[in-house]
Image (cartoon, rainbow, N blue to C red; front, side):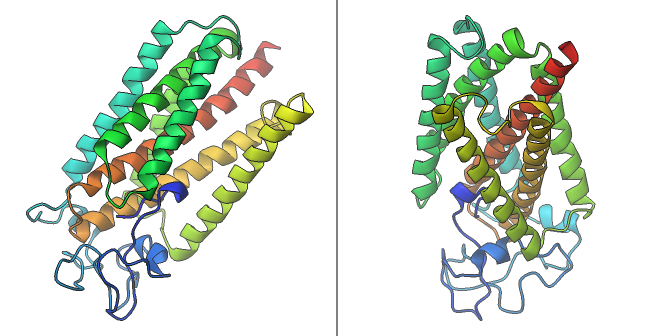
Length: 306
């Protein structure tokens, strides 16, 4: 199963007339793994299952089956199920939450954005990013790497959230958590009802938009570091609110891609270990949404206080 997050992309389901082998990196693999919704011509007549041990075979359920039949297909031995995805996701997100709480309690902050705790947060963020890159280049998902990533990500979130709550925007953290959960629930409901149609065009648009968004973030960081001041102004004012809202929208789009890939992995009988990669992708997306929600709420609360 290929992760929907650009950095963590792994496998896809190729349409190549039956010539692809297991784990093929066919040019159309990305599009096929997040193709049209159930009931549409998403895979074509020659769908290749990258998890087939004895050559190409189709999914365990028809692509024309209702969504509930696709996600609740009868499991086969060693195949990923929705319960596996839920359990691994709960463990990964629980690790993020636990280390965030511990860092909040054990790493006191002295002022907004400076001091030893802020340095620890920056170091934890770099380590988490490095671990995510290591996982992205591995052929198989590593539970140890994924949980280590979650732990260091939690340290970063805990310090940033504590600083924001104490010195920048009191109350923003709780609202950001609730907002993240609301976005998750809303996208899940919309996906299950097929209000969101995950097509090839949708996938390409999301990846292109995310690339532009990340480039703007890098430019803003460089402008802030070398030019002084507030960079491009994405951390305050109407521009900051707009930038954060776009980030939340992109996160919601990535959630839809994640849901589709979980659905496809179950339908194609992906190995149970692939549920760790699904949990990894969902965790990255939810962290993204939380940070963007925290940005928007911090700006709004600061404007109201002024």
